[in-house]
Length: 227
Ligand code: DC
Image 1 (cartoon, rainbow, N blue to C red):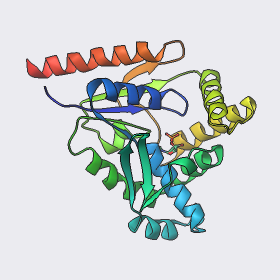
Image 2 (cartoon, rainbow, N blue to C red; image 1 turned 180 degrees about the vertical axis):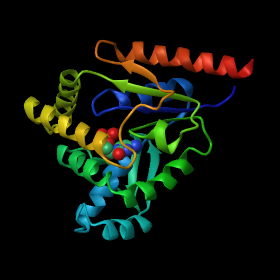
Image 3 (cartoon, rainbow, N blue to C red; image 1 turned 60 degrees about the vertical axis):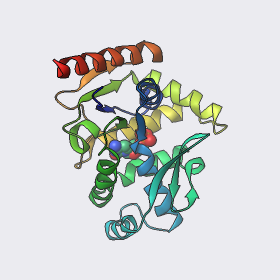
């Protein structure tokens, strides 16, 4: 069967990660979380004392940065060199730092190649902000997943509680609004739906409902291409 490259973009908390993983599992495709790469850059910049607006410093760092995904029994882990940094990149602080660093052109340039290499073999679901617009404008199927801000904030609040790093709901909501604003107003590759993206509003849909809807689109795409 023809293998597709599928992109899922959207704001924080819209359910991209859960839905992308489930869709990739159902299709037996790779799942690539591109936000983790920006989080990895932010993590390394902090560890090395590089300011998030120091373009030359960030560019130099990115040239020698060995970020890679490794699949193990616990799922997909993010390594920087030989160090598993997955446990350090999900805090609210790292979310804001990743958003800041993602606005720097040098960082986006460096990660563009990494992402395109990961997509070379297709059979993958890529989640991010600019997958359908910039990284893979030729993707076979593009989704843009949204949800009301209050629902997204509540989801993220619960997630942080489960990870034992709770944050007040009001603060989660404020951070999310700020991050949406940063991510959609930056000059380089701002968060926006591709012209040919299928819009999915997850506010009142379950994960299963969304995944089934997406699988229908995949089937149609494959059937259409086979005709
Ligand atoms: O998906 P996430 O919340 O883990 O992403 C963290 C930040 O990284 C997000 O606020 C913006 C940035 N990002 C990006 O600019 N482009 C992507 N493709 C993915 C993430």
